[in-house]
Length: 290
Length: 328
Image 1 (cartoon, each protein chain N blue to C red):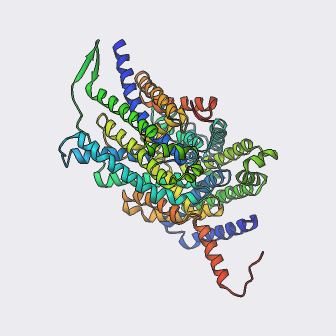
Image 2 (image 1 turned 30 degrees about the vertical axis):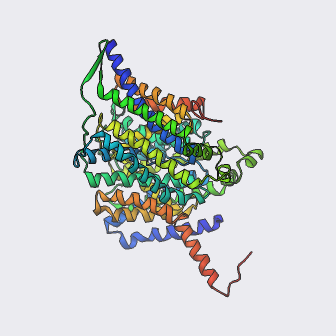
């Protein structure tokens, strides 16, 4: 019994870490561009399919190392171009927020059914990073889970470092605080918007690669993920990276616990109830600004 | 647009639709499309009121529709209450549901409202499919298959005879459209316009945004629930597949085609979209693919919808005409 609880906690921590990575991407887009990306879940699936394509039919040399090496620039490019051609032209309208939501929702429908048409409805499974398990004091941890955890947290720290320490990261921060002011000091707003979108695409795509080996790649699997990272983002406070970190782990735990005690049917409902209660008490989320 | 003009557009449009069955009454396929057009026109205009006029980013419209349909169907199927009453009960149920959802979320900022309402949509699927739903009689994953048809004054309105059912739907649609028109052009509509122009100023003049938003949310939820129940009794079967994203997107296409916040536009958009959607049916699995691409393309290329397009063509034509002197 007690060992089972440890298993549940570990599974909660691992899902939480990947949610944190993905929610960070979402909160970054919202914080910087104030746009809402509904196609987020489809980028998650895209990450999974890119990994599958490279590993299974192409059987690329170097395994996951090359996958990450190729997927990061690829996802960046896709994200950048999508922002440039789909989202950027809408900024001139008054009600561009609704329009962006609609465009990205359409994009998500297009991509999900595109995957279905190209790859078929059958789920694809990815080979694992490493097999085997570690035993610590009676609790069994899959090595693969451990690697996922380390990579997700490592990825998060890496993005955080980029945002805090590089010129691009500082420019992103400046645009988030005051777009007009940033433009006055010579930061090109459009480039930053597109880059932010692209970086968030990388984050969720990496999340897709990491989680797809535990679960599977399915054409419509992204919707659930999008809702969850969205909930994490709102729960933690939109635009607050720190808040979404805490929220991701809380919700990862909640999901594992509720799934273990009551069954998976109740996971979505419980998450929703927790979110509603939080928003009723704190309308801007746990650590939302203002 | 003045309300007279809106009413005139709607009257002409509905008059044309109303006499169509005289010509195509014996073509079941066309009649079915027409009935669907009417049903979706109501849902789309409700959404337009919420999104375009009240400025609430609600994504729960399909959820209210399905909730209304299920509520009425379950009452009629299990408790054998006449459908006329269950439809009204379903409307009240979704109205209350709208208030319950609206109370916590209408005070939140835009994206949060979208999240909470979309959350309602997403929780409905596991709720109806899971054990709770089966216990309530939702039929689980298979859904409800034999929903009794509507009976009124000894007449049975079902999908057997499409022409009478068309006129029943037609009447309901006209009533709903009239209610929506009244909402838009009443004090509420003006209040929303004021809130959109300058929230601070409108609030300082005593316009209570929350109160009006909640009321409009409740009324549109009521209408959506009623029309959803109507749909359930018409089609005769319901399943949670209706909650898939493609129906949601189709509804969104209607709004985009018609133009957000350009009221009679949503009705036009619904007619165009439903017809195109039915014509695309032979494409099977590529239909949602095309739908998705259409949404994106239309938002980018046709930002004001069909109504906006007509208006810009109209003004272009007026400019080219040297006789007319532009007024004002």
